[in-house]
Image 1 (cartoon, protein in one colour):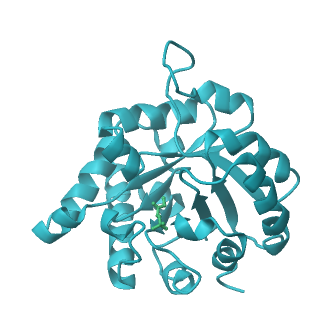
Image 2: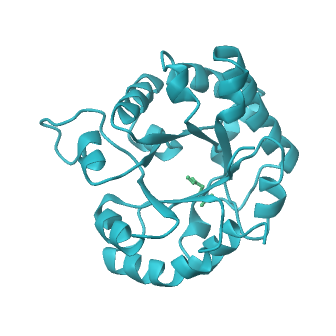
Length: 250
Ligand code: 13P
């Protein structure tokens, strides 16, 4: 039985002060949850978030990392810096980074391998645009991303991965993929992992759905066979809403 993962992605929202206030309310609301709860916060909030969640069941992750240990890379934060302060998760290859920062699958692949070298579990994001969906090539797009992003990754790492299927047309739009489509895409990813690796890896890997997840649709989505939880943007910004999503089964 795979443990459900409920991850929040604050994107570029909340200051360190907001972060402290957030966890002052949130921690108590989810203290009885048995799911893996992860909040991926902006770099500037990491210290406040780690401090505010010390000794709780909440894990803190980042939204990106630089795969190099150190160097002349103005504005970047290295994988080693994150390791040193105890970060265990990072989103990698979010569609907003692919779109606005031109991150390619080759680059995403480097980041995934480097994250594992530094004991950070990647939360890899994949998904099709509306244009690709309308052209009928959504499945091909997802399979190409999975194959390229995980190329050369040993099975012992692949089985620990978290992959989020996030159809780009559903992000921040209020539109959610139908439960059938969401489950079908997550199953497609699991089947591809089975082909690339084996049954064991495919059965262990956690595959999430992301894109306009809300307290009102979380239960229906997360109870589907191939969906192991969610990656939540907008609705993770409010402690009560995100707690309701974490507690979808209560
Ligand atoms: P929304 O939940 O705001 O649609 O964002 C989804 C997302 O991009 C999470 O990474």
